[in-house]
Length: 326
Image 1 (cartoon, rainbow, N blue to C red):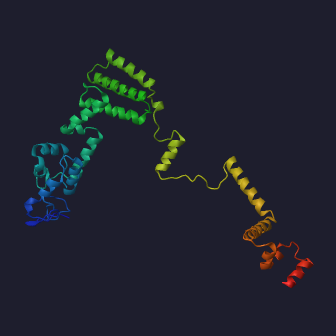
Image 2 (image 1 turned 180 degrees about the horizontal axis):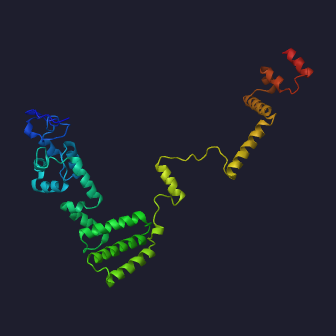
Image 3 (image 1 turned 90 degrees about the vertical axis):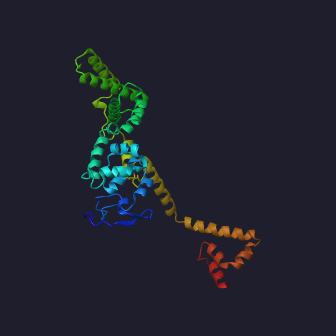
């Protein structure tokens, strides 16, 4: 969808509702704005956007399809303050000198710069803060920003590929990075055959062997070194262990199963147990009534059928005679 060349002369801002002429809205070549201008006035944008929040400015440029140049933006923000957005649009907006650049093209280039760790070179306003942070880590005022970034990248690579778990190993890793940096400087200065370089090489080898930072001891990120790592990996994938599934796997499971079978056979195999339980329940009922003041004779007079059930031999003549009387 192409932008419509027939732009309205004036319309209402979708944020504040104020009726403005078209010049109060930034131009855009984004296909989402069919009239060639965005729908929020410049006043609302300058009041609502935090110029120091580069992520917010980047999202805005993506929305309006302006190339986001952080270095240029920081310079304009420093010089123009609140009016920086208007000045930025004059350089990178639609129909401006850099209008052929779009957001995605520039964003891809900056992503590569960030991945290489070189953003501080492109953004001088950020270099001071980055240098201060790195000097706190490496504790040396003589290193340049480039040196500090190189040291940090080597250090992070060692931590990623080697087992750096203790404070001593962490200290050894930093020393190896510093020695490696000095070796690189010797090579750049053309003194790779000097005694200094050879001494550094010897120290480097001794320190890597002492710290056990060797290819043999490197982390194998494609395998698991322990059962715990395997379980942690599976749990991150959403797996949950069913700790009991009814299967017999060891002597404990076998013992539990045998006890259950024995108890089941003990109950179901006893033919008189059911009768004994019923008799005990009846006796418990009789005892409860006697506690209420009834004699045995009064109880059986009120419940003659119970007496018949308690007689063990139903074929006894006395039982038959007693039934006839009832």
